[in-house]
Image (tube, rainbow, N blue to C red):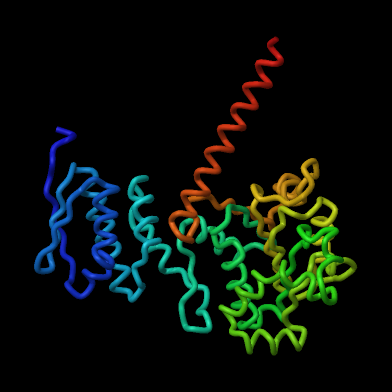
Length: 335
């Protein structure tokens, strides 16, 4: 019978049990709640009670978390949440597959690697394509992973400099009211880029390379009239560019350069009727071979699980609004 309870078993080394199940059995409870199973561990063995499909998924997930722990990879809440999401989709060994990817270490020695299949695809495209558009909601690691790839290419001498840029569209006409010179006025808009570089490179290394001109953080307007050779260039918050700005930026690219364009199409700060340069570029450039597009979703959010729920709620609401508007237009045409 499909609803009958089965009993499955697997081994869990005692040294990994606390890590697999989390503090105060947090992860164990999450697995039990999501898959509607019961997990009973004793003397290195785990008994799993539940319907056949869910018990099998739970066993696969626990064994995969065990393999992560054995590799020395800390088991996190994000691992468990994502592993459960993949288990529900009947996809196994995803966490182990992702864990094999490695980009670089932070200044504290913490490894940076993709944490979801979407992020892995993004990193793979950055490695193989000259221009990559990474588009998705907040918390999907678009900018941070691009920054890690840029620092890795710089350390490996694959590029001679890193250029990070953002449109200061939010500042718009308000820049003149802020105190200080132009750099101090635009710095608040570039702060997320500084923060990521500090974490990956360290403040001292960042400052030294910045003083030498090997790392440049500047508003998009400063790119006009330049040719950017042998550089790793990241355009962040690209949804706030105009079509003219995006064209200007993309035509700055010189030989030996790699470009990453990141943005979230749902968080535009442009005037209501303005066309986003990111939206237009994704339509215009879709047929060019050395340009790749990676669309990250709420499944790729790696911040607090609540952020994932917030992003998903907004996605559902906007999809519902879109369907409602389309129905109104159809009904209007009929009448």
